[in-house]
Length: 399
Image (tube, rainbow, N blue to C red; front, side, top):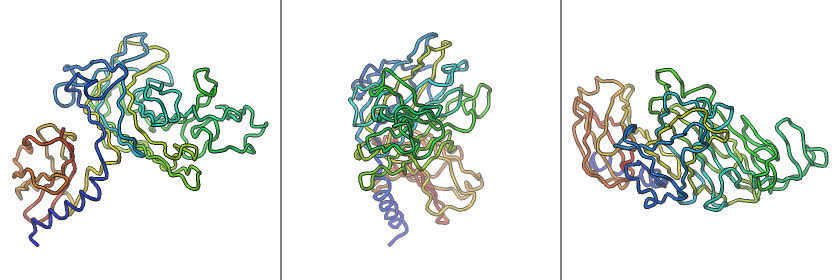
């Protein structure tokens, strides 16, 4: 077998076992304002702007007028999945302060197929939240529709009902996984309080926050008025013998840095063993009203049904790693070696489809830019190879 055919075989096997296991559920680059035609519903307004954008010519502007509670809202259904990966670029106005209180603004919600397609995200069988408060990234869950009102554990550890003893109360699988009916699994913050707007009279949630502020007020690598890549991942827990097992996963990355990571999450119980994520909700919301006139921008939103392995390396040498960006890409890529000396070997850039077909090949220019041909949108494997036989691969998405 020739060396070239061997590479194609390696790529085909890797793609069949890894890449095909993950599908793009939604990609939104905001270049077109016809959101209804693209599957968005429930009122997503055309708030695109060409004054601020990360890629292409447009981004989405979520504008809070002073005193307003909403920066716009809209939904998009996707194929139900036990796992969801959501990434997007985000930037905040220089004066952005969010809610000014210890909760809100809400930014992104992911709902499930147990709820109505127009269900309010604050009273569901499960809602996942992706947001930041005062610059600190947060992931959260809420499942108030599941609350067993006969035994409630409040924030101050007082109990309501429970025959007077929370520890001895026998819960069934018809219960909240978040906080009001107990604290099973990984926990950072919790919230259980009476709520007239909740199905069973109580709001039940828990949250996980980054250890410090990452969207900061001063110029530098964490400046909120620069573009930053947010990546998040939610993976449902397993059900064994009709019992929910706390082995679900959550992740939050900021510009590639892992900030939140837990592997003992209970998303669902045996009462909803087939619960799956199926709805993305965009809804900038400040319940107390925005304290100032402020804006947040979003670009290149990507939703997948699994965690993408974007830096699969085959035979890398020390100091031979590369950065390939942007990802997703339109019509050009920048290739940055960690060690510029590798350019002396005149490395070659190859691009393969998920079936292993070579669609593009070029010796990398000194300016490190690759102008791509017109490609069908989807997943591709980029390979940088040296004449010595060493190589580096990374997956990218073309849209």
